[in-house]
Image (cartoon, rainbow, N blue to C red):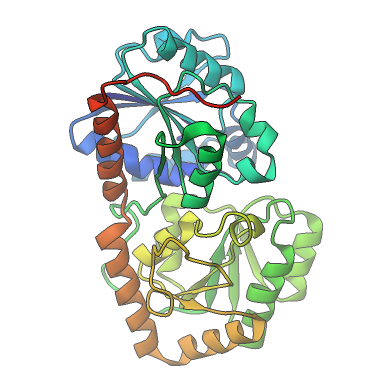
Length: 373
C-alpha cells in the first residue's frame, strides 16, 4: 500500500509526543514493504521552536536514529488531491489545520479511492471540544482514538462503529534495554512543563519525594517558565533542557528509576490513557513509579510492571525501596519489558491499523460515515 500520513511534524519532537509514535509506526510499515510518506505543514510550531533553540544540529539525533525515514513539507495552498495522489490509506493527525482536514475529507467524499482516517492523540475533545468539533470530518471513514475514554467521546458525537482505540506504543527498534548495563544513579523525569496542568502533582509526586528520598533528580523538557525553573532550583533539581527523543534510551540507561506524572485530564475525564513515556520507559528496562492513574483499560499490571504511589509519602517510600533493592528493580523491569514486548510495540499497532483498514475495505458500504454536526 501507499500510506500518506499528515502529521504536525515528523522531524521535530519538540513538545510533540506524536512524533515518537509516528516514527516507529512508519518505520515498521516501511519494513513490511509499504510505501510511506509523511507530510508536514511548512512553518510547524514544533519544528520552528526546535530550530530556533538548537539550529539545524537539533535534528541530528532524529536523522541518526531514523535514516530511512523522511518527510515532505507542504505549503498552505497545496492541492490536497495532489498530496494524496495514488494513496491507498491516508491518516490525518488532529494537530493539522482545520482547513486541511476538511479539504482532504472533500477529496475522499468526491470519489477518492483511499481509506481516510482521523487520528486523535490529545485531550482537546474534552478540554476544548469546540476546537475538535470545528473539524469537518464528514468525508472521513473513521477515527483512531488513543484511548477508550476518548473513543467514547467520538461515539457520542455519532461515530459509533467507526471509531477505533489505537493506543500509542514503544518503538522497540530504538527503545530497548542497553546491551551492557552500566552503573545507574538517581532519578530522571522526561517531560514538558506545559500549561500548569500538573504543577502541583509534579511537586507532590516528583520534586519533594526525590528530595526526601535523597535521590538526585535530572529533569529534561521544554516550556519551563521562570517560576517553574525557580521551583526546580528550590528542590535542587538538575534541569537539563530539551532532550531529543531518540536519545532518551541513553538517558534512561544511566538512571535508577523514572516517574509517571500524568496530566490532570488523564486522571479525571480521560482515564486509562498513559503518556507515551510509560511505554518507552518500560521498553528500556528502567523501573517506573506512577502517580495516581487508573489503568482502566488493563494495558499493564500495576504493582508488577510498575509501582503506584497514592500520595507523596508513598512515592518517597517507593523511591527508597527501589534505591536499596536491586531484586525489586529487576523484577519490575523484567515484568514491564515482557508486557511491552507482548502487547505494546509499534509493530502491534501496525497490525491493528492494517486490520482496521482491511475491515473497512471489506465493508459493503465503504463510504464516509454520517455523523452528527
